Length: 467
Image 1 (spheres, rainbow, N blue to C red):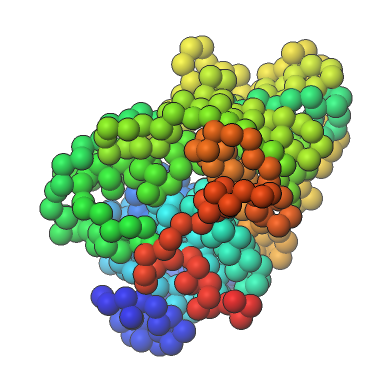
Image 2 (image 1 turned 90 degrees about the vertical axis):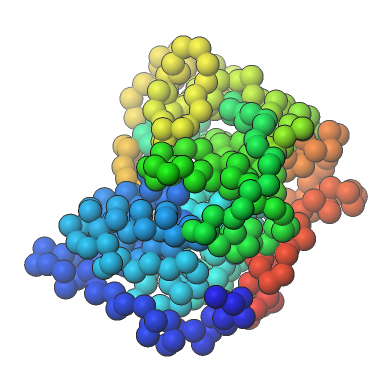
């Protein structure tokens, strides 16, 4: 499939509809089906797609997965079978595509669920929004701060609903912790501690032939063209279930992401922003250090220690030596919140030592009862299915728990931390202009060169009326 066809999205709808099977609207599939069911296309059929996002939408009320897309045909077939088993239908009734354009150009798709590697997030979200689709997307929101700005602008310009996979917002302990902080139980917040896991070095550097099931050039997308080796992409284990459930190598390659600072940092720094009311702003100063793996294929950071200081003077220290969670330290004590013993996926890292409490405090009274503060107007306290929030936001025409700008700002905090680790010196950030103050070297790291014909910048320039 030539890229000239992929890029020709504006006129592709009619041709695509002829090339693929018709999608039967879910409303006609049974007497009990709701009349306003939203059709979902699952883009990305790997670990997160199979274990979190497809199951999340299959459990959601008012939505039905009708199509799937992946550049690895084995994984695509596995997703079609997974979805078909859930709906008790045949796998060939789930429309399959290797090129996401073939799905976003269809008028019978309402929502796209993006569970791809990080370097594809922003571009697919931009193109899907301008194609008229609502978007659910796994974190982090972008590979760079500049493409994150374009993604957020696109969702706003296209007037689409968006939800980021910051599922901690749908867990009661995180809701309570943030509300207790906003309520003022801790008094003035003096400091915040964020603990994240790290990633190992290693990875097999031996060049290998590209598997026949994988469109590797398309998979590389806007990043540089490099030789194929399995540890750079994802497992090709003959047992598809084992292959999909294993932690993919791309997570540990800086070419495709920034490591745990965005992988888990997007979750915890989002909680910091939510509790402190910083969702539409950013840090003022960044100072940090980190050790980056060398000598193998995997080159993301290992150890790190970063401090983000926000405009009101509150320091947020992000350190791999802290327990995996967020601690708010105030005049009256501290509140710590984490996932406890829960794991979102089987390969999630956990903190060493004794199990963490999901919600803890220096004094029981600090976390007793329910808060009086309302964090989100359409939510009562209590754990609930995260994906359902997007369905409800679309039907109720209100903002989701994690809209695009909120997603961009939390990702920005992570990427600022990454830049701080790289440069190892104090940086000043203008969060309104989204640039560093008098620092050309740091500003050069706000974007990456995009390999033609791919890239979020090209997509935005092609599709936006404001470009």
